[in-house]
Length: 223
Image 1 (cartoon, rainbow, N blue to C red):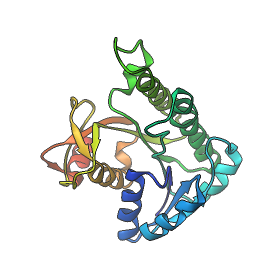
Image 2: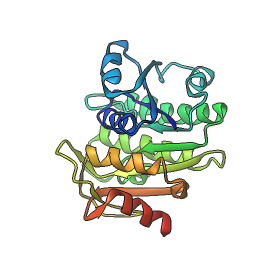
Image 3: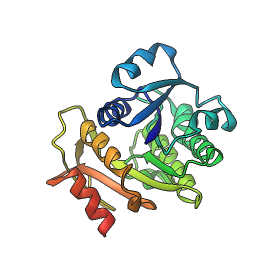
Image 4: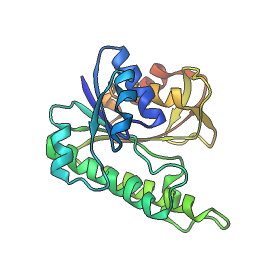
């Protein structure tokens, strides 16, 4: 299986790359900065240099040729302003979906954010305007992906991310309530979702819990 990950140098992406490479799968990561290539190689991934903020659909599609699945794990990141929430968190996700369609790759996972739908309405009073823009961008990207019957999409919405060691146990459901989840466990769930086509068409919240990852994904499929 070959998977291409947008935002290939992100903290979740690097974990996912190590996981996929460790189980003998082929994985590539799209990065904007060539200086990050060595980190991807060390994780067992093929680095692909491409700026999703300026590339065309055809350019990105060329990098997706032959892939079995794609994962959008890119983000403007901390310290970025409202404008880049739009160009990365929304527009790049839509571009990546367009490119997947162009390349004939059906399986599309997108790492979103819990409560992203709330960003489509008026944000709560007192919310940081940049965070509100982030939620709007993520929600709009999710909606743009979920309209496509040419993609077998799954939207994953983790709770507050932490860097603590993963437990391998999670709660995965349409709605979970707010809580934390280690990035290790987010990567593990993504790795399981890639092999769970029955989760196509689902939008899932993810937090730490008591259910082993594979069982949690299986339960969602069964439900």
